[in-house]
Amino acid sequence: MGFSKEDAVTFYRNLVAANHLDISQGIIDSFTHMLNSPAFNRAVVLRTAQEKSGRTFESLYANYNDSQTTENQNRLAEELLKVGVIEHHSTRLLHPLAFVKSLWDQKPDLRPTLLESLPSYFMLMADQIGKCAAGATGRTIIMSRLLAEALIKTPIK
Image (tube, rainbow, N blue to C red; front, side, top):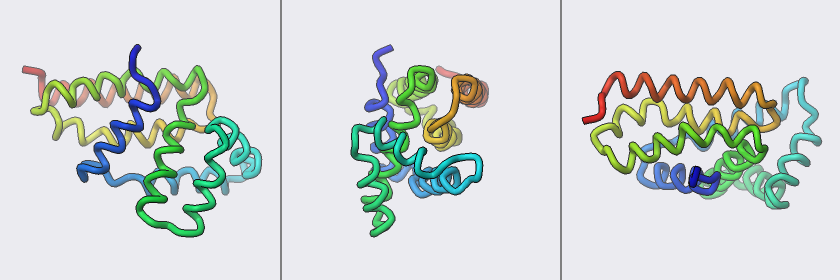
């Protein structure tokens, strides 16, 4: 496909830096809510995230908890995005995001419409942490539908 989780995080980082998105705290809040859910074992989720992220996750999460600066918030949100698509079945979430990124780069007139759904794309990516292949399929369908709705609103010229 030529679009990796690192490409997705770079796209996210660029959108945040340009003040197009401000959802880092929302991503962290969603993850924290999952950690505190009775359906999940907090220690297992944290250990799994740490193992899948190359042993950097735990320190990022601890740094964020100690000092909730914007920098720590954005770094943790980026790591959560990476962990969300680490499993083979979860990488399918990158397909609709790759298409949106291509439209973002090549069709600037579509940007306002794309910005309506881009926050959802990244929230769905991060929300995939610890979820099954069926969840990835469902999230991919939602992302594709959001893209179709955006293209219907503002056709490509």
